[in-house]
Structure formats: C-alpha cells, structure tokens
Image (tube, rainbow, N blue to C red; front, side, top):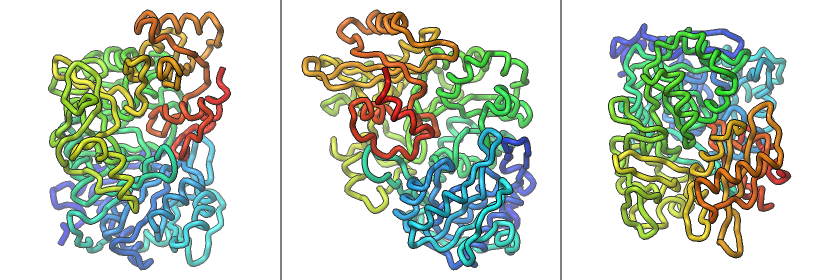
Length: 559
C-alpha cells in the first residue's frame, strides 16, 4: 500500500517541481499535490478502460499537467510514449501508430514567443491515421477555440479534476515496459527504444546523483522537452532523489535576452543544464544580460546533446561561472537511459572533457581492430550490461542488433568518436558515422569545427566528408556567421587558411559554404548526416525531429 498523500519520506510539503510559462505565470507543486494529481490522472485513464500494457502518448507543452500525466501512465502499468511538442502530423501519427497507442494527452495550444500555436489541430489530424487511438485528454493551456470530438475527446479539467485522489499502483515486473522513446533513424521509420520499470528511472537517478549531486532543497533545471530523453530523465531522477526540478514552457531569450538568467535568479536554481548551441547563441547578445542577475544560487552547469568547442565552454565556465562552477559534461543517449560518460563535481576537469564513465558503465575506446586505445581517437564502446540499457527497438529486434551489436561480439558500439587523454579524461568528438577520413587520416568533425568558430565572425560550423576519387573523401564545411556579418570571398579564404594552418595542407577543405542555420534537433544536436545527404542530393531520412527542417533544404542550395 503506498503511503498517503506522498508523505512516506516526510516530503509531502516539499516542492517537487516549479513551473513557469512564457507569459510569466509560475506555479509550485508539492510532493503531496503531485501524489494526488497523479492518482487523479491514473483514475481518469482507468475510467476510460486503460490499464497495464496500454500505450499512451504525451504530446504536450512543458506545463504543470505533463508531470502527473507521465507518472499516471506508469502507475497504471501503461507504456509512456513521449512526443516532442513541436512535432507535425506525420511525426506524431507515425509514432502513435507504431506503438498502437490507445490514448493521448495533449493541449489546445502552446505559446511560442508570445503567440499561441494550435496543438490540438495536429493531434486531431494525427489521430485520424491511428486506428487504435480511442481517447484524447486535452489541457486548456492557450484558451483556444478548438473542436472536441464527442466520445473521444475529454477536457482535463472535466475528467481528471473530478477523480478520487487515491489510486492503486499496478503491480509490475522489473522488466515490464515503462516507456518507448523514439529516436530518429537515418532512413525509414524512427527507432522506438524500449525501457523498463527498473531501468530508465533508476539510471536517471543514479546519473543525477553522481553527476549533479542533487539533494532535497536544491533545484535542477535542464532545458528540454518531455519528448526527448532528458525530459523523463529529469522527472524520474529528481523525484527519486527527493529534489526539486524546474520546467519552463517557452523560449530562453523571450521576451528579453536575459530571460534565462532572470529565471535562475528568481527561482534560485542550483544546477542549470544548457546546450553548447544555446551558449553560442547567448554570447553575441552581450555579457550585460547575465551580469545584471544574481547567479549565486548556482552550484553547477551541466550540458548534453553535442560536443563543446573551447571558446563557448570557457565563456560559460570562466565568465558566467566565475571559474568556480564546473560544467558537468554528460553524453550517452536515449538507448542508454542517460549517460555513458559524465563530469563530476569533485574530480579534475579540462575544457570540453568528461571525468570518466558513469558509475556502472564499462566504457572503453577501441581502435579499428577492436583493441583499447588511449591518446588517440577511436570508437566509444560498452563491454558489459548496465541498468537502463534499452531492451531493444519496438517491433524491430533485428534493427537493434544491426545498430549496436554487429561489429564486435558482445560489445555495444555506440556510434560516437571518443578519446581518453594521458590524465584519464574522456572526450566525445562527434558521431563516428560522421567521421571524416581524408587520405587515410581520420578526423572528428568537432576537431575541424573548433578551428572555424575561433574566427570572430563565425557563430557555428559543421564539417562533413564527401566522396573524392583521389583522397577517398574530402572536407566540406558549412558556416553560420554572427549577426552583422556577411559572406565574402576574403572570409572564405581566411577560414580555409585557418584549417590549413591547424590541420595541414593535406586536409584543406574542398569547399566552405555559408548558411543561415544548421539543421538541429530540439536538444541542439547538429544533424551532420542530414547535412551530408542534402549536400550530395540524397534522401536526408526522417526530419521530423528537427526544429528547423527548412535548414536541410537550404544546405542543398548553399554557396
């Protein structure tokens, strides 16, 4: 029998999470209130005939209701299907249909930079393509006038709020599926990573404990959407540790460039998870935006999703953090339930590095012959099982084997390019399928990109390798300039010479092309495979996870 009203650890009146909306509204939810609201949502699902093994989608903005919705699905023994709130009809319907979803949590709309955007319309069109979908529970977020289909659609405030505040928790096995999170494949349909009750939540809490040292009374804000792995990771990890997490439904620079730092000050956030891409975007806005806020509550920064470049890393660490707040670098994946390697607050750090493998992860770096290497670039691998490892891809076991287990026997090959230096610090250097091999020399794209972003006019860059009859492949570089700068041949020549000076003439780029943006996922990962496909005139694959799919089209036209 569960403890009454969430008070089993004396945490009933402790704050479980804090929410802020783009328009400025805020709300704090205690553990006791979250317990009651989760029970009400679970009872609502059961009243619709849903139970153990039923898949339920979550296609919602980061609003207060999203947390009890997530937990309620787990409470009834259902399967959580997190969906990125920016997805269009094709992406939503494909994932719901693949998982045979029976219900969907959604909202009437979401605010994007002050303007309401209709989410229910997308959900309605997607539902028409999902024969198994029987129910939709809708939160009134934006006050939009939307159609409600009788018998299928239910307002949250009518259905959930009327339910009893106590509910039984379904008995599940450790290996029962708790969640299927979809990640984009290079071609074909997305991959549904299957996670279990004893896997994902525990791995999230373990990494959060060792990496960010979260304690009760501390507040962790990791900028993410519930549709990405870091959303559920944040919820499960913080609640298991008895801490407080923060969620924000809006843009970090709206309505003013200091919005992020303002929230850190007002809510006394102790750990801030921020992507290198966002840091690079904040730098040109000026130091005055963070300088006018009291950031003394911050203990750590944290970061995931992509490799760092030294300059933005040092800006965040030395300038904003005053050289006193470590950046907890974190890298793994949806299939991992968290990290393979991570920083640690009490261990030595270098710019852009990781302290080492996460506890419980038997990570190594292999050369092309499958032998461990140090002080050189190789494949990131895992040599033993770990808690949180995906149990496979939903309905696609062969694809799972081919993706991770086909290169060396009983070795998980993650697909990342990594290195361990003489001091035992680890580095992730980009996807190994992004690896560029020019005249027999292997390059990680981040190595070249770091050179380009040192130029005062360059905001960010992406490096790819393209086929070449003589060298096997050659470098092609895509460059985004800072505001106020224009492409020109002199700049192109300067950048080319910078690469030659750093890498040698044999690695001179074939082309340097200027673009307005690079295709990225919501968690700021630059999709180099799509850049390469677009440049070569090939099918870029599933672009539904991109926040800016138009950037793929622009790549093909770049000059």
